Image (cartoon, rainbow, N blue to C red; front, side, top):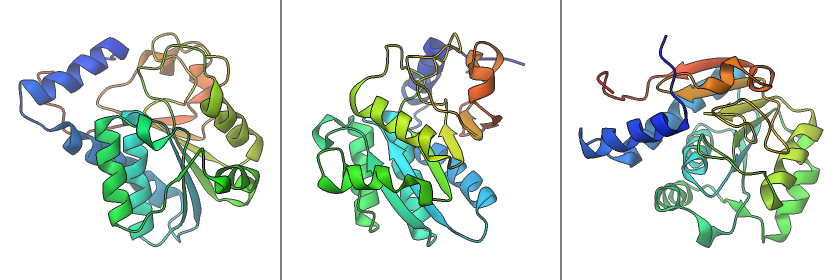
Length: 216
């Protein structure tokens, strides 16, 4: 089995675009839809889902999940733990697509955000798309607040690529980290799945094929 650390994962992503002509938006769409497949597996009859998104491309994956869940009729909250102006270009693109489908993302500056955190315990599933494989510093600010609220809620968590707050390469905690029931990672397994506390925090994990060329 091959595994890919954070740098290699980033390189694969970049080469898929630059050498093979696969748009990053296409990879993001496939990633988000592969996570939504697990949402449907966990909640086949529908249910109440909160999707947490960060400012980066992991958050963009989450916005794809939110759009798919909304279109499938799930009772959805989409919370973004960052100001809208801070989103990466790919995440901003997915934000526009989510809004066009009827999703109403709630950002940290919105008065509704804190109330939604208080009501997390009433949900059936939380999707964690706060931080991706590139995270390296200690979590702070809205991300830290969101992670604590998620863990405190007692609601099952499905993490996107890596449980937020777990270092991809070491499996160690970046101050605070998500305890996931399930984790869907993309392309190849990552080192955190085999070492540190990442082994426990990832829960049951699967690898989704999102179309990276085999040569990469």
